[in-house]
Length: 292
Length: 292
Image (cartoon, rainbow over all chains, first blue to last red; front, top):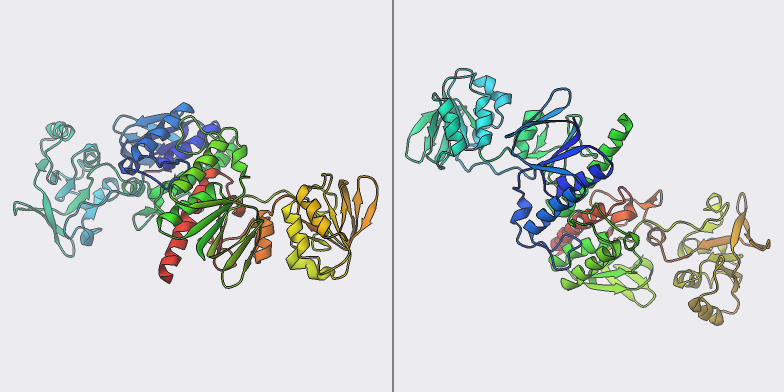
């Protein structure tokens, strides 16, 4: 069992890892090589680089810095986190256990731009299959997504209803989803773009670009990768405006689960992420020391 | 008049300057090339440097980064700050005015190691001539120090008493102090090391290594450069355990005066200093924008 698993390999996660590793803890970083940082053309306002630095270079510097200190950095897709006598992080490859967890997955992905989606949240629209699946027992269940994450969410729904549809929302069905559908021939797939979700009190149907309306009682949004808020919701971590709520030690309402960087909001800047990582790690170092 | 003067050219001060300048404000950084950072042989835990970085190199990188953005960085010795329709920063060379001030002068210098000194604070021992000088009108006033700062403090006391002594505490009299003493022949100077301050209810005398006890009613500590707490006390800024007290926007109890980095305590790490600077500057940018 690891002392700490850090989810996220951007400035916040790597900064935390540096402090945790230097205190001789057994840690693991799981990243997805998909940091917002990599998109920045030139960063002028992060202290220490006279000519500024390219976002991708800074991101890669961080990974290299961690590896140079002997930190294990894996690039896998985190699909979920749960707690059973320790935290269990499930990825597309494996499961990993730890005493503490640090969420450093950046600001949440933006929701798909679908008319009426926000209005129907909690009225049929959900972002967590394991949390809300039960409400749709034997009903018409649909999901949005096209990658490992929608497969993982769908797997949590298969025993709940025989009426399941997956919407790739305009994308061609991915290879991994195709493989999954071969094993589950009852699941229908729609490749048209969704333009609206229909309903006022509760979700009634999903309207596609071709004009068809597919009846639906529940719609689970699982597009792209599992976002910060997806992961948080699964663990029962409280959010505030899509950001994770933490106390002054960066601990969430779930004991042992911490969150840092853009995932908790505030100033969305590298410097603040790096500082969050340092302060949070210093606190976890203290907790681990006290347990010895 | 500058929009903002930042006192301190280490990670906190420079980081703040980057954010303030990029928002098109008219700013000035005054440093003393005496950052604690420069002493660090190798820094492994500041994000972005795969092989770590030497403290002096990082400090110099910061200065260069600021200058590359067109920020004025002066190396002068700050002797005091006061408020008169704006902040006035007095250095050994000049005076500068600004609407806002950011103190980023690092953690306070340690006090000289003199027996009984702490016990007599407020009972004759003072760290601010302009604040407490009046209490010692026509009494025996002494000062500890040997550089520009003790000269500046002494200048505030000359009209208060004819009985003034300066203790270099074991150092040979500096050239600047010698010049000052030529102009003020009434001031006595002692080069012996101080081993104890005598008194219980109030200061009575200063005991030197040679065994002499020099009678004294007040002793002003002004060794080295003006420390964070010296500067703060002069402005009426509240301290807490030698660190400056600030609110969540890094503003002190003195409106318009901010403090960041090691000067406010917390985790004394580069990453936290850099983050403080970014967050504080972003807030000041907002204030300046509202005033336009």
